Image (tube, rainbow, N blue to C red; front, side, top):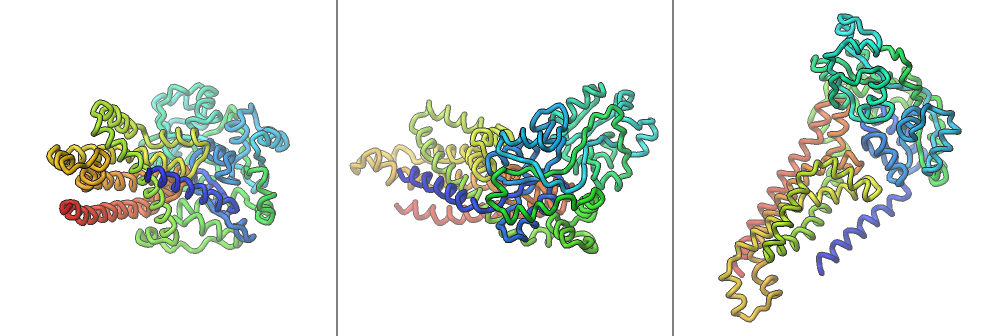
Length: 499
């Protein structure tokens, strides 16, 4: 029963963590530059009022942020009126704020505090290519049959994105591939693609000299920036909310473009850019390319390391608690073992983001809990296989010796088989731990933190330094854990052999 007690303790730890976080104002942001920056502006504004604030950066697309808001995983995040009306609520157009809030109130949410700028979608091409082909409008793409489009995954799937746009303009036959915005701009610059979706406040338009195609059928509606929040937020954090409300009308389109440019073109971090704007001073003079060493050992390294270790430890514990009994069963009953190993093998073939999406829907929450369960499922196979193989290697002679000493089945397992199989079982656990260190980086996509937070941020702006600042610590942690398990195995081996 010991493993059930440990499992129960783990659940209590998560419950306690959730309870202790109840007085924290949680700000969310999507996985693109402007949302990161606005999220930081909100977080720093609320924090200045004395509130305890957490910014859960780059949680994912609109649907994930909306689900997180409804479940209480976050309290507020920046969005756009067109996205809320067309994508989230499925309305035919963008209504007035009162009607928008009437619809949102059914979900326990509201929209308010307009920073002061609009940011709509558009399609863009490199100016020389567009001029050569005489393309000025989106409808002109009908004559560009070999056009290669690189569109963001969210735009590809949202109701007011590519599906409706391609139908409106009758361009559904063009070749389309999904690319994050940062990667799409790099591909456009290399000539790998011809057309991308852009935001109208995107500094890459100016840097790359892009031609924004005219929306001649007026498909894209007005997308005013607005905060979406839980209805109970003003009551739970009155001082913080009063401070956030003072952001109304303070950010012009030019200011937002300047902040986006500071992040994407000058490679400054979101936190500093937001702080510079809030202090009403121009961004600090660029000191040149950032050092990779400085990016790796940035002030958030201890927090990210702790979050990553917590994800790995909790998921590994669940894998061990479930995997060792299943491995014993697989060794004892070969027919059942075939099904157990096959099932664990199938789990590893499921794409990690698909498994996370399933668990988010099942648990109706984002954050550490679905990430831990997903990681524990991925780590099951090496634990089960290691236990099954190690027990099979004990041999009948040792079992017969134990029986000859008068041990019953339970005593034989605890006093003979498990001690002798321990090194092999530890090897399976070691493999699971190393797998989890790498796989845990995907947890950042659902707001669980860890080194993946930097990788996701780097992907958002195509910043290799930021991506490497998350990848390198994860690789180092994997090597360190591998070394630690090997040292433990050397100590465990002689101890087991002397029994």
